[in-house]
Image (cartoon, rainbow, N blue to C red; front, side, top):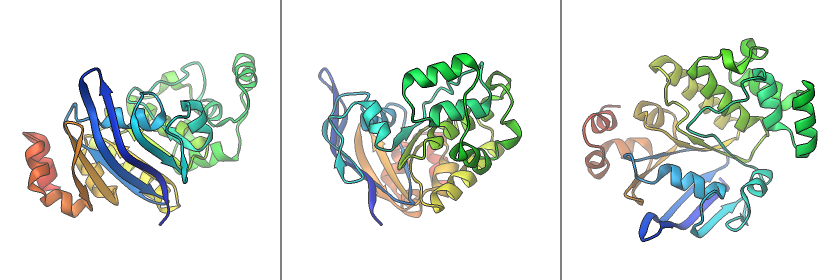
Length: 253
């Protein structure tokens, strides 16, 4: 498989504190890679660095191109999409319109004009995304009418609507109940099996270990383990890094 996203020796420092230290990972076409670790391990920082939102050393390679010095919007145009921990949507727009705005490739003036005029158009990619995520019945509902779980799913849909090469998902299952998390995992797995590359950050060990092809574990900004889910379940270093309930989840899944 060809790597769509590759991170090489990625290091992020805030003053004298190193949030990430020489991190390496790769996400291939049609592969779902999980990124886990205790709170403060550097997971969101890594996604921020990949997206260009924080300065870093090392390299971020997208589709064979070094994008380390490119601005976030330029990386997005190259095919890098992400979600955010907070399900920030345009509450005065419908679900379909939220996806259409996120998936549009026109200039900001055109997008703004469409939003203000209420004429945001939908395309094939948007309709396909609605279907793939099971959002068709919610397509014309206002974003302000959605549950938290539905809002998180629309956030994933917005990332996918632009037909990216790789999607970085930052805790998409946060706030979801067990059933919603399981359904999300099944839908992500379907998309990946169709060729989408994904990097998934989440604290739901059941989700990560059941749907991911590979799992990378961070602790204090360093990779302490990487491998298939079965390997990670049995890795004592990983279990020790997850004190309390998370450790039980890792060993029991």
